[in-house]
Image (cartoon, rainbow, N blue to C red; front, top):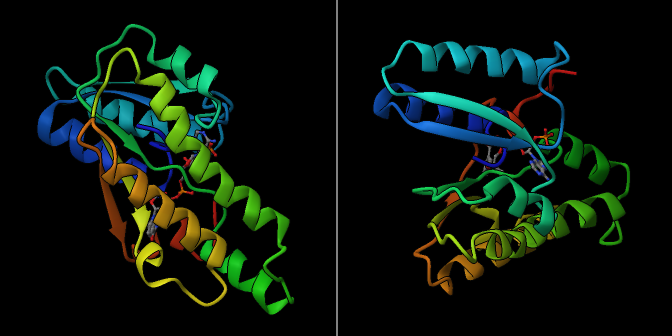
Length: 190
Ligand SMILES: NC(=O)c1ccc[n+]([C@@H]2O[C@H](COP(=O)([O-])OP(=O)(O)OC[C@H]3O[C@@H](n4cnc5c(N)ncnc54)[C@H](OP(=O)(O)O)[C@@H]3O)[C@@H](O)[C@H]2O)c1
């Protein structure tokens, strides 16, 4: 579960642990052992896993857009499926940037969009030896566009197209907004 300690990811982890007794490997860039929000989320999910027979969760710190790093996480493990929930920033931040006069040259928005695209290819590399279907959490912006969200929308459209042409049976889910969760939250834990 790439991004499994994020807003939507944590809800999905909880569901998979409790409902199916899943054995999860969660990937994120930041440390989860420093008492911050990631550590709190991981502690909560670990407790959830502990109350369901067979369930388990482990956290691996890695940049999933880096093919070598993601390949190292996958290793020789044959996963049943991979969930890709990579996200950066918030809708509020993006609207603030727009109001402050951001243009299509907005470097941070471009970098974030590029990372979504990089992840598609990083997954191809990491799963080459052990193919598993990828469920991509993307956005309806990829279909409808969105004023001020061109970079995000373009990257989401790319994710959908990439999933369609995959021979692993990938699925791209074009979500609308989750109320107050993850990138749709008004404020993020610091
Ligand atoms: N929330 C919504 O309303 C909504 C609506 C439509 C679509 N979506 C999509 O659903 C997905 C999850 O969204 P969310 O709201 O849960 O976002 P979120 O709370 O920001 O979580 C995103 C997660 O991605 C991880 N991440 C970011 N870059 C990474 C990288 N390079 N390598 C590994 N992990 C990385 C982050 O962990 P680290 O910071 O530790 O790396 C974080 O845990 C996103 O793709 C988003 O576009 C969300």
